[in-house]
Length: 312
Image 1 (tube, rainbow, N blue to C red):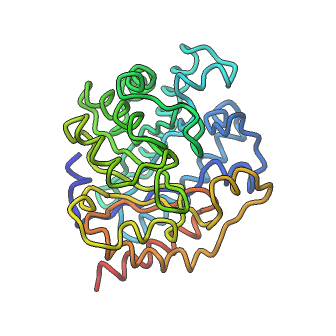
Image 2: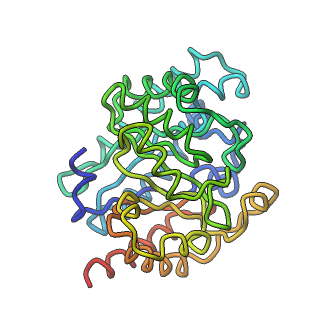
Image 3: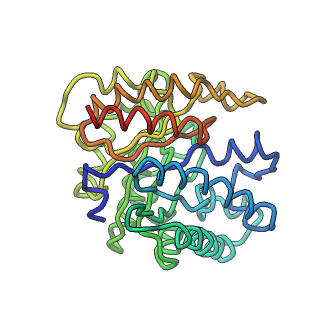
């Protein structure tokens, strides 16, 4: 994964896949799992169109693209809620990887590197630590999905929207055991802390200590920049470990988002401008994209500000 260590190359990611499919495309996603889109021709076409918009942004702006498999809620812990067996759930991870690999193969060039990212989500609620796992337990829970994605050919694993350090360490360990690059992304509340109450710097330090600094880097996702800008405002060595941000367009709290029946897509132009500060504050930031409520408009605005900041 030397490409992710090259700070001269920026990578874009997509936006809020699940919120786009529910609110803009009208799909029903049981357990908010985008993996069900693979089951129909309509769903597969929507996935293709969705990702090709972001691939075009990356190509036109001279960046690489980190392309997620739609497997955020397709781990062992979600088999029963989805009405599936473990074997069937793991097979879906393989199908998802093959589907996304075909999209990559149609678009990747020397000027447009595309990293196939095996996406892993928390075993419980992404907005609240209803399931608190220690590192060893989390490793057991997540190892089947991590290994299924690895066997299917992903380039890396990213664990997104994690609520506490213990689960993050277990996922990182599961990937490290098979020498698969792994990125850990925490979600933050409006006070800039993890839903567990842990400060971000302490959570990163704990995971690095438990795993021998196994993650390539850390990310922040599913939080508006206003929620965490003060947390990263003062220079400190731990900020070097943050390599990506996928922010929400909405300033709502997680509780408010969970209860909302309409999509708050915020202001794409404003969100892009706010990333100018983040690029200044986070020296190793090299993956940028969106999360809940964002789409290609938001990521395009973010990419534009990133281009101007880097050029300056």
